[in-house]
Image 1: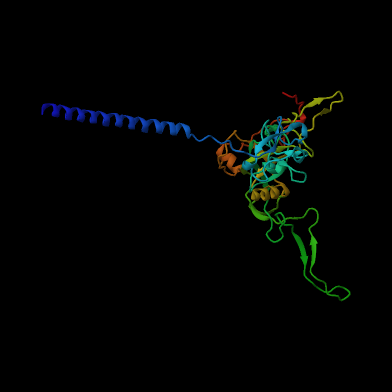
Image 2 (image 1 turned 180 degrees about the vertical axis):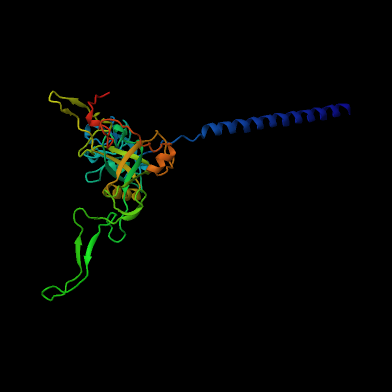
Length: 364
């Protein structure tokens, strides 16, 4: 009986051992198989097959405005799939003969928008912002801050006008001239005459005047002007902020960006005259279309325009008051001089400052 129980216990233990070993083997088989499968089934990385084409780049620095030749260009390979249509030059021959709109650094791809083709307009037009215009003004050292402004500077334009009173109907300067008229009548031949107008002769009044009471004699006297009407001067800011596009004439042919305009120099000669570089006679500003009309009107009406250089980077609006003789006298506290029993010699009837050309200018 006892021997039977021992035999059955051994069999139970053997069964447990077999089940445990089987579980371990099953775990190892499952684990080892999964790792082997992962290692054996790794997907290889595929190298994409790009189609390459040639595009043109700058092989050296190309200054703005210069004529592009084959010596300053080269080509590189570029993926065709990433190439925007109608943007880059595909061959050097296509770019040769164009002009650079901007400075182009080495290794920069050359695009169609970077250059001007023959007949494609001027370089100056690309420097004018949309909605603005360029207008040239006559320039002198006195009106352009001794030629201090250069391309890209900001200036303020001042205009001065002489105003006179005129007859509204005749549009002629007052006072009007006076004439003597005779009523119509019969001549000796029996012909009816029209109204006759006879200008007043020498020694008679030729202008309308007014009667005033002479305080010394207590008699009325007729007073007429001793000279024609004196115009009145007024000055005001015409343009608060304008960009300088060019000082002097624009070049007619290809130029290199950064070419400096020589400083005007005047040197005295043995004959007493002067010689040297000619001053630029114009300055071109970028202004609004309406200001273009205003400047054109003022120039044709005889106004004097001058410029004042603004601080670098300052584009703020400047508000100014119109300046007249009364404004200057009041604001600057200038009194009207008293009539004294003495005066300076020689007699001075006008004030004239020497012009710049009256000096011998030496280049700094």
